[in-house]
Every structure is written in C-alpha cells, then in structure tokens.
Image (tube, rainbow, N blue to C red):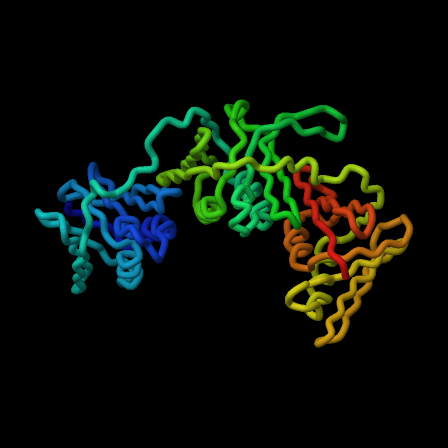
Length: 377
C-alpha cells in the first residue's frame, strides 16, 4: 500500500475513528485502525467489538492495499505534523511496517495483519429510514443526560428508541419515533414525527457509548442521516462515515407506568430565570445530596438550600401558581439537567405532593416530557 493524503483530511478521519478505540486493550488488534486504499480513496475503520466506525476519505493511491496500525499513536503523530503538510503512508512487501513520511519527518509503526481485524458491519439490517440531522440531534441531546451509568441495570445504559403513537392536544393519535432514557431518578421522553419506512421497527436500546459517538458526528453531517435497524444491530450513515453498533440485549422497563397521571398542581416559571436561581442557591447545598427545596405559594416560589458547613441560601421568584402551599425537594443537578433542555421561555411543572414524581415540560413544545423524583430535604 502506498498513498499520499492531505494532513487535515487524514487528521479529521482519524479523529472520528480512533475515539472508539479503548486505551486499555487485552486484544492487540483492537488497538489498531484498519487502513485500506483503493480507487482514489482511503478507508479507515476502528472497533471495540460492540461499536464500529468506518470512514472513507479521498487520497492519491500509488499502490492499493491494506494494513492495521496503532490508532492512538497514528492520530498523535498526524496531529503534531505541520498544517498543510502532505502525508505519505507506505507499507512494504511483508506488510509488518507502516512508514509515514511528511516533510523531513519519518515514522515507522508496527502493523498487524488485516485478516485479524474483526468485522462488525456485515449482515443485512432490514429496517431502513432517514432522519433529519437536526431531529436526531434533538432526540439525543434532550434524552442522553438521563441515561443510567449503573452497570448492574445494563438495560438502562442507553436510549430506548421505538415507534409508537402519541396523543395530540385534540385527542388524535399521531405516529412518532420516540426516544426514552431513565436512571431511576429522572426520565426523559422525546418524540418526533415517524419517518417514512420506520413503521415496523423493533424497540431497541442504543448503548451510551454509541449515542455519544453519534452525537460528535451529527454536527458535521449532512441534512439527513440514514438509519438501518435489526433486532441486535443499528447502523447510522453520515456522508462518508458509517457507524455500526450492537444493541443492548435487554428489556427496557414500561416507562409509561412511571409517568404520573393524577398530578393536579401546575406551576409555570421562566425557565432561564429558574435555572439561574437553582444554580445560585445550590452553591450552598452539600456535594453529596445537592438538595434544593422549592416552597410554593400563590404566585411565588422560594428556593432554598442549607448545609451544616456552608450555611444557607434562599431566592424568591415570581411564578404562575394558583394552588395551595407545597414544599418539595429535588437534586439540583437533575433539575438543571432538565431545565437546560427547555428551549422556550416557560417551564411547566405539574406536581402532586412532596413524595410524588413531578412532570416538567416546555410550555412551547409538547414533544418533550421529563419526570423527576423528589428527595427529602
């Protein structure tokens, strides 16, 4: 294999694929990136056996062929080369050494056989549909903060993606693609109109690492992203990048049971003013509990936090609330995670009592719903 490629193009592609590679690997080939050159293109691939990213980039191919090289080392070398330099990659006859030349710099890297590199992207995925990049970005951004990091409840370590029907304000039901994430303390449920071709998709749990890698790529993607699905794999196609991932093999809990239906007390507040006030008051709360108390009275909300070491803090806000007095406590970090997703001016809290879950919504957007469990303060 012999190719010449512009540094910026190589660096960008290496940056995308090498982030999948785990720093500590017991299987040597998984530390490597697969390089294949043919027909004026260089294909780069990396995998951790659960997730695979493949990207193609234009290159001047002098001799077609392939090899695998240490992903992080290769990325670091290219990152440190001067801007605008042309990079030559050359693999000799025995295929054991990759020589990288740029200007007066030369590096020799040990290679492993291409045949040893595992393939994840094979197999047919029967459900295929396209999603606008902006809609996929919204689904990911507004749910991923609620993904559980508790490994024992592995079925919560991702976003549950499924097709369902959603009631509109007028009582009609519309088909939607819905994303749900929960860690047991909070729940995020966001939906978008069901894309054409997604009608019969199975409900799938997309792992947290895949979600985070996809999110990095969305900003650079074209307007539409191709999705392909089977019962155990999902594939995302962005321009010249393909991401294939195994799905979490588990059953996502019946999240509808967690969403309260009898909450009868409604508070509406300016989302940005509320978030800023929570942030200020929470400065006092203890690092462990991060508790903030909300004391509601007609037309007013008092936020407070106390800590044996730091003291106390209170702040008052004007709110739209017409019910009887109510005091309820929340984890301030969870409150902020949710209110930061509200893009409109108003946040609507639907409450029952100090011990029951609270529903939080964007007044101007009915596609997102958040549930937050209270805490004792």
